[in-house]
Amino acid sequence: MQSFSCWDQFLSMAFAQLTGRRGLRDIEASLGAQRHKLYHMGFSSLVKRGTLAAANQNRDCRIYQDFAHCLIDIALQLYADEDLGLELKQTVYALDSTTIDLCLSLFPWAEFRRSKGAVKLHTLMDLQGSIPVFIDITSGKVHDVNILERLCFYPGAIVVMDRAYLDYLRLFRLTQNAVFFIIRAKKNLKFRRLYSRPVDKSSGVQCDQSIVLTGYYPRRYYPQQLRRVKYYDKEKGKNFVFLTNNFQLSAKTVADLYKYRWQIELFFKWIKQHLRIKSFYGTSANAVKTQIWIAISVYLLAAIMKKRLNLEQDLYTILQILSVTLFEKVHILQVFEKSDYTISSRDNPNQLLLL
Image (tube, rainbow, N blue to C red; front, side, top):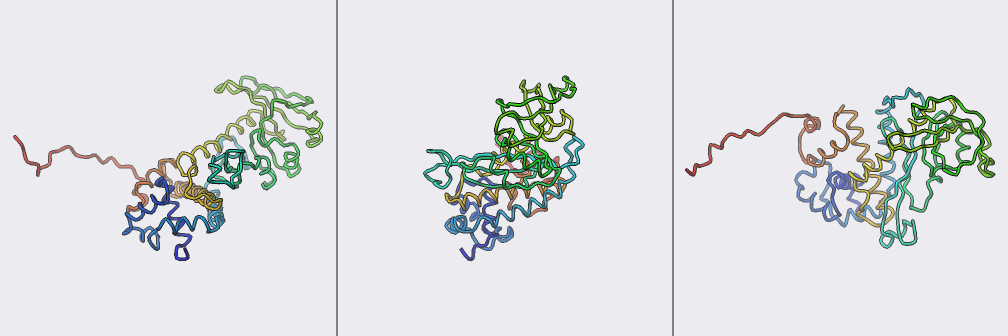
């Protein structure tokens, strides 16, 4: 495995992501069929499935974790000027997680339930450009709210979360650090209204209140005032109740920011549908994390390329084009430029006539 470099491993796994290879044997056969082009792609030698399996098993996945974070820094700079359309100066983040189901008998380290295994992909996303800025891969048993302990935000930042992160002690720590949050309230919320602001119900906002919590532990963990915003979503026909410690934003902006949280849901859906993170080439924790980190790196590389080359295509189209042109020796811009080329229907002069 010493002659099989980290770069060779990354290229092999990135190739598998882009072309949807089903297993190590599939990767070996596909790359072997193009052996005369591997050198130009950066490979130093032919890829053997045993060597790739050993690398995934034993080579520390943090190599690719660090590489992904380098790509995150590049992508954040490129997408820093993206506008959410809400005229906000603060950075807005969305925090959520997605569960990837695993077979407990094959992945015994991925504890989730008694007869089911899983890993969780905890993600903090910068909503400007939909770039993940923090990713943590844990077993399925790790509760979402525990990730708040590992995050550090700049003062003034806004974090949008769903009800899984409703922990008043941790939320109060965010307030003490001058970090704003918007979170969906639970149905059993106990509170006392202090003040109601006038609202325009035609905008969907039903009420905008200053409240204090009245439950014994909630009041003890979060002793300060909170803002309660009730919003009716016409598209879904549902009422949503949000809690926030930001009293300057309009109530409609609070509701709109929670809608933007769906970008992280779309990110999870996108990588699950278009990258291989639901079936794995190895069963160890290191192999699984290596595959996930390389998949995320492929997503980031596509996002960086889209911005740097000013491509009009979306990320899905970019990856689809790359999947069928990986071995083509053409300029990258030529692959993505649109063409009106059509096949002529004229007769072949070499075709003999039967009649």
